[in-house]
Amino acid sequence: MLDFIYYPVSAILWFWHRVFGFALGKDNGFAWALAVVFLVFTLRLVLYKPFVKQVRTTKQMQELQPQIKELQKKYKNDRQQMTIEMQKLQKDHGFNPLMGCLPVLLQVPVFLGLFHVLRSFNRTGHGFGQLGMSPYDNAHTANYIFSPDDVQSFLRARIFGAPLSSFITEPNSVLQSFADYGGIPDKLNIALVSIPLMVIAGLATHFNARASVARQTPEALENPQAKLMNNLALWVFPLGVLVGGPFLMIAILLYWVSNNIWTYGQQHLVFGHMAKEEEAKKAAALERRAANAPKPGAKPVDTRKKQDAAKTDADSDAVDGETPKAAQNGSKPAAGAKPAGGKKRSGNRGRANQKRRR
Image (cartoon, rainbow, N blue to C red; front, side, top):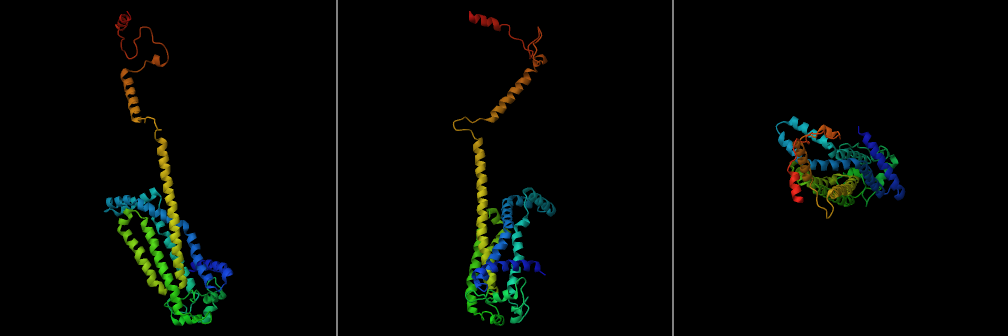
């Protein structure tokens, strides 16, 4: 049913096993382990752009949290109008909340595909999803893109004596299927490999969550839903790795560890790049402010005074009256015509000046 996932996942794993098997040997446990790790890195590289979009969307939602709260408060009794206003707010700022969880949604089928492909290297169990095949039939049956020879190579591969498809609680009847392919593994060896991987995976999950919470705004931290999700990410998910680890194959634990390592590095890279973008925006704003500021030693120009003075002059011109049309056209006023504005010159002004000269 999910072959469209299983075949691509097995093809990527097959490619990396060919690369590392050429250098280390096809039956080498570390060649298979590195193939699993680089399968994770390949898939995460494909999901890099959606991850960046997720981070930017989450940041936008945190910045718009006050406006979202206002809309929720304003339209608390009108759900339909609140939905319309929320959609309008999202459209105006150009973000989609679905992008905030898209990378996680895309990783779920990848994880399920990898889990199924790795478990299908040993199909001798009788539990859920197992085929109950005999050890011989299992070793001589292809596993999606892997040939029977590849299946036998995976069964022979060991990391410190533990097969990659084994887990701590694996039944002894299933462990017997390794007898002709590297010998029956010891559960102590499986535990010595699995437990450190479980602890590393749990710690990596916790520190990734802590780094994500540290970058959230105070408003987002006060949100009840955000508090619940933060507590789940900080404590419940890491504890889930420790509780579920004994039931997970060593290869799946490798997937978990490498996935968290990639996430930790990717978070620092993306958030560091976004911090530089913010600093560049602030520097550009300061440069614009400095360009508009008066030079050292120069008196600041109050544009408001200039505007008031211009307004006063315009008002005085309107009071004095309109300029005669003849003056506007550049021609001389007619003889005996009164000066513009209709005001007479004082006849005593000349006599007073003559007296002063004497």
